[in-house]
Length: 442
Image 1 (tube, rainbow, N blue to C red):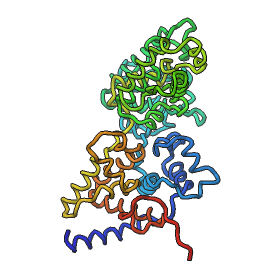
Image 2 (image 1 turned 180 degrees about the vertical axis):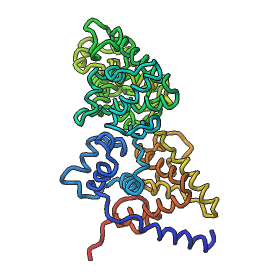
Image 3 (image 1 turned 60 degrees about the horizontal axis):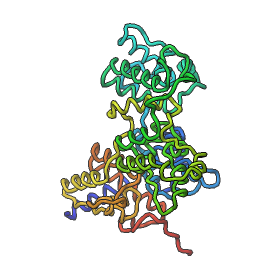
């Protein structure tokens, strides 16, 4: 690289450095961005930063909220979204509705959804779909649509996600998508032992009805694997808590079975591949033959819930729809760090600058310097996998470079340096990681 280009890049970096303050990113700052800047719910925050409720609580609880957040990746994402809030990778119902209905927004979001679907029903059937039917076809009782128009009648997260999925389908297929969605809802009703749902007031099954072909934990697991969803994605999409998802995946049940068999034998709990899931299911079918009656009785107080039909009809409808139309999944396809690395170096070399080493990419994504070489390795193994929050931040970086080229990278690099300064790291690009350095006493 010529001296002139080197000096120009350094000048650009000094210019953009002032865009980011060097104050620490604290729990208060993260919460302010998410709640007031982005208007996110607590579930949205868990999804955005790919963290569980315990992790979020440890950041924003009263006695820790003024401390600097330890996770540099989370801090970098916070700084970036403070400057570019419109890039937050959290699906928005108002955005999806605006793509298909030029009258939105008029009322509360879900009230607008009801009005829109009534119009779509008129185009599909010659008459507007009644509000009570819209409620039922979204997996709720018949009166829900009337409550959604009030301040106290907010829809549950999974209902909002189902509505967003439906908006995408309608954008693609028009009124026909609404017809098919109703068919899927009726299919879910029959699986719950009901004759149908359109003539009912709620989704309460008949006592004598026997669920068949129900949507259960195993089925959700298979769908999530097929869509390439991580655990934070699955939890948010279907409105599940970590505890509920753990029960549906038999985590606690598997631990008890393993203890009954002896700890030397591993219970294959599904954790990332279809083959592993099938291994678990085949293994579980032979449980009764392998464990004595007394031991079976001792662990049956924790029931194998992987085959239990999910309680919420909305989850069942959404799963069935995505099995048919995986392209309607509202979760973004997260960038691969290797693709981001190649894109960045392609732009740099095209402008006459040298390619960056892998360690610079990992530092730019808030991880230690050695992570980059693991991510980009061609060998197999779990060590090369990135974490969900790194995938999210890599996606933001790739989008920025695709839209604004090297200007975006200069801005990103200045942000990294600002975060490093807040941690008393003077030369971040030469450091081994993001561990804070203690200042020497004067």
